[in-house]
Amino acid sequence: MNRIRQLRIERNITQEELAFQLHTTQQRISKLERHLIPLSEPMIERCVKIFGVTADYLLGISDVQVEIELGFPYPKELPDVQLQEMFYYFVSLNEEQREMLLEITKVIAGGSKTYL
Image 1 (cartoon, rainbow, N blue to C red):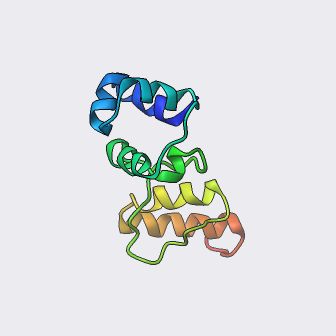
Image 2 (image 1 turned 45 degrees about the horizontal axis):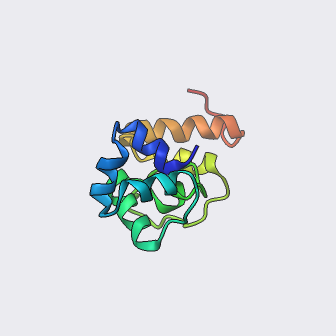
Image 3 (image 1 turned 135 degrees about the vertical axis):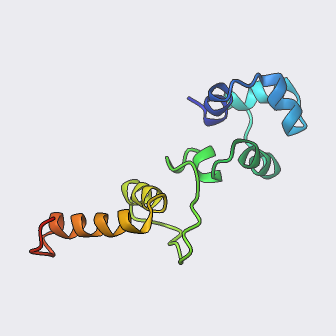
């Protein structure tokens, strides 16, 4: 399914409402959703802001919907989606949970003989 259509449906927005938000017509939204016309750069920028997703997700390049502010350098290209997903969940943890996750990871990887 087209990501614009998917996001529009998930948020319960009509094509007309989305067209208004994107400063375009309902017909253009319909054509975008059916892959009859390409997304322009300004349209990508507006969709990213409206839906709160990354351009890569919108274009189907990535399955990670949002970028995360980590407070430390974040590699632009992580090796795989699973690593991106791990970062996503990691930043939502508090310090104690992060320490626990690190210990569990060490045990699983065989890098520590300490068991919880």
